[in-house]
Length: 207
Image (cartoon, rainbow, N blue to C red; front, side):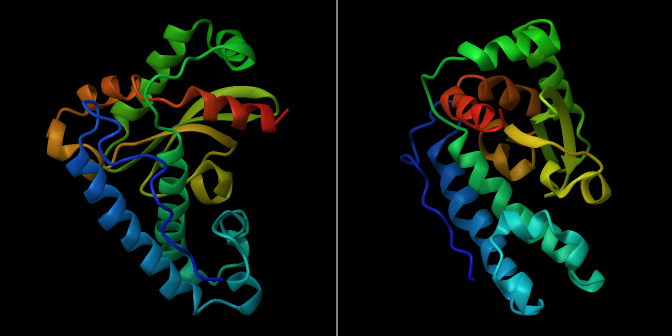
């Protein structure tokens, strides 16, 4: 099974002024494509049973990956999976509501407190990585991971676990053209383009 670069689910300029078209072209067409190409190269070197897996299946079966391929698979297959999710989590004009909002208030105290915790996780992630809202055993929590690690890899391989509902890419290539070193401004802009409808769908799928 060869991985392919999924098209963006919207126009490159659809997220402006929060994320500019030039960044979206670079991030999707160059960075994401590089992960796909590298992942496909690695896939050919894996045992046949692993080659048949989707990217998500492979990432939850990292214990079957040969040790000398593990770092490459985490970085490149993880990068492909993370970006594929990220594109679908971005949209202008949706609203946090319903059962997801109720669960956020239940587990964080308020929507504002959730946003504060998520913002802190994104802002304090040293170097490159991701901030996540995950659900595990029915409870929501915020975690962060380095590089292209994802909570679906589990505690052994990512240091955290849970089903991802929302994520934010804090690699510099995600924001540097527009925001330079102002990661806090990028995180603040992110709240204007969260696709809460898609987050809610993912939340409902775990009930």
